[in-house]
Image (cartoon, each protein chain N blue to C red):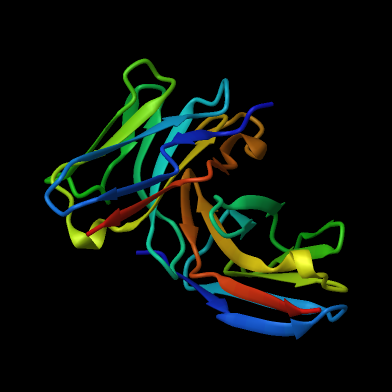
Length: 109
Length: 120
């Protein structure tokens, strides 16, 4: 089946630093999504990417859909304490959504 | 606009007992999904409905799990009997349409807060 490899597994960074995480797959996806999940909550959509090469921003977040359609990255600039949580990439093929294992982000204030 | 509603938020049962979860999707969303999220992993699809019909239940352990969406709106997921390995968060999600004419926002999935199940 389709699998996504998300890295890093976890990050512990200083407040104000920039963060980068990525997702790769052996399969092609039509859409890449990035979600954030806070403890005790469901995943919340951060950014959706629809075209290969697309670069999209949402506030301090920037994400790109890889040219090969098999990868994506998410950058967070100037991290703040409320950025803590688990970030999931997800690839959408038709109506089927496949998730990575998540990147746990911890921020030192 | 109200989001996806799920209840209960938490449930603790003993193995071999039965349990049911309820989901009410975003109003007007035709497609409803149930996911299982085991600690430390991403959500995994159990079943997908479009309106009141099943689109994909290939990952649903049908010997113990069942789900229905009788009127094409809210849905219930049942486990009977529960096993220890069923301990997980059960997430419900909905999307506007399985295949939208715009091809874009129609198939984006929005999630509820989930039900955390502990099987003892």
